[in-house]
Amino acid sequence: MTLVSVTNKWVKPVEASFEYVLYRFPVNEAVEIPVEAARHIFGYEQENKVPYLTRLAFIQTMNDIPEGIKILEKFRITEATPKPDHFISPVVERVPLPNARRAGGNIRAA
Image (cartoon, rainbow, N blue to C red; front, side, top):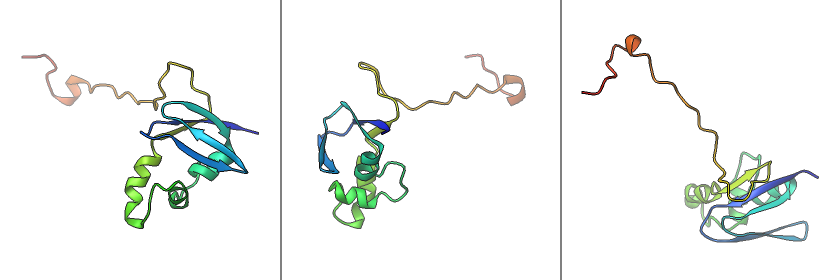
């Protein structure tokens, strides 16, 4: 059974069940759950998130979908367990500064 780590970055704790097991997701705490549970609860690796937003009661009508997606994005799902006192952050791509001669500008401060 493959496990994933779910970290709740939303303002409220969330509870959900899968296969008669209740999973609690406290705020700012990583919880390891099976991949199948993450798919069932959060729509992990699924394109259409609407059924999961409805199941979690993040939306009531179709007009609520954009706000529900914002809430769902606050649940960080990773394949590796985060270490205590470390932040989970996406990889940030670093773009080099353009060559001053090629860009035709002056990089010296006035």
